Amino acid sequence: MIGRRRPLMRAALVGGVAYHAGKRTQESRYEDESRDARLEQLEAQQASSAQSAAPPPPAPAAPAAPAGGGMPQSVIDQLKQLADLKEQGILSEEEFTQQKQKLLGMS
Image 1 (cartoon, helix red, strand yellow):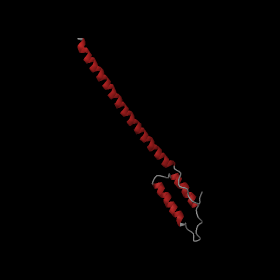
Image 2 (tube, helix red, strand yellow):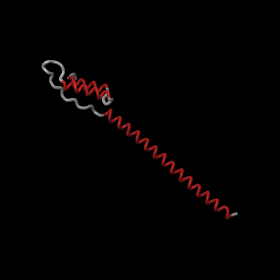
Image 3 (cartoon, helix red, strand yellow):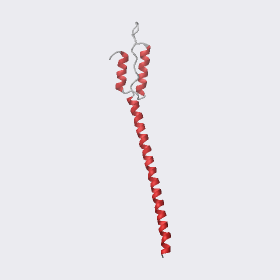
Image 4 (tube, helix red, strand yellow):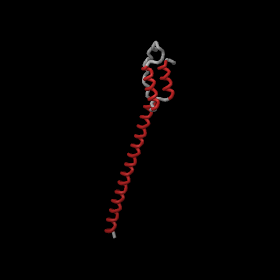
């Protein structure tokens, strides 16, 4: 009877060790996947906050208006660029309005 118990105990021990090793490996994989997902989420948040927090491009000083009245072509081009940035979501409505007022000399 004692001769039979040792192989059974050995098999139980080996099986138990293998079970725990496999379980540990699986837990490690879950932790790695969880960590990678959190890192991707943080990177995405930082990228989106960096885009929204990026200062708008500095607006150059508005040149003097031509004698014939109207607006210089460079100011019109800059206003178009600001509108494009707003449409792309780079500038908020408030930032767009501030930059537009600077360009038009209304600040």
